[in-house]
Figure 1 (cartoon, rainbow, N blue to C red):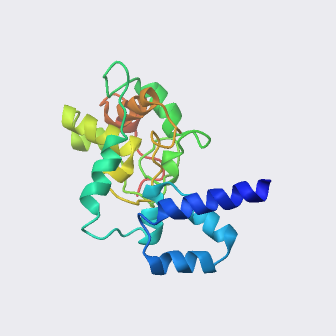
Figure 2 (cartoon, rainbow, N blue to C red):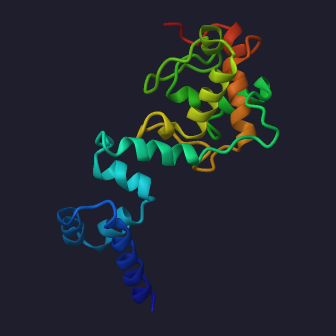
Length: 189
């Protein structure tokens, strides 16, 4: 019985995948075996697009892709895009929670990585305008709304952080009084 359900699921996945895959791609998927096909067609449609195009979407697909990604962004119930910077620091610097410092330089507590851009003194360099708050919030919630197929976690879309937790991280990055903006980054460059 499980085999029948798996075959039906695979057939449904392939049918849905036809929206994104060419016939040639579908044939390659089928020829690669059921486990590969199941993994590939089991992706969310947006992830499948990134996979198909090796994370470099063609220009003609970008407007619709970005529009769909922006539509996924949800905001805190209270409408405030900056929360508590102390809570945000605990999230940003927690390997089991957001682990932001592993990819971004700028944390005063942890030596940062260089996968993503440096965020050192982020708020002091950019200000705290509503536009900067919104941009920062939206990138953290769903980076694909600005940088399609980037490796950055889509913290809100993937359910890794709540909108309120993202607002706390925004405050940590932007508030001029936060440790992020008042203390030197660990391991100065």
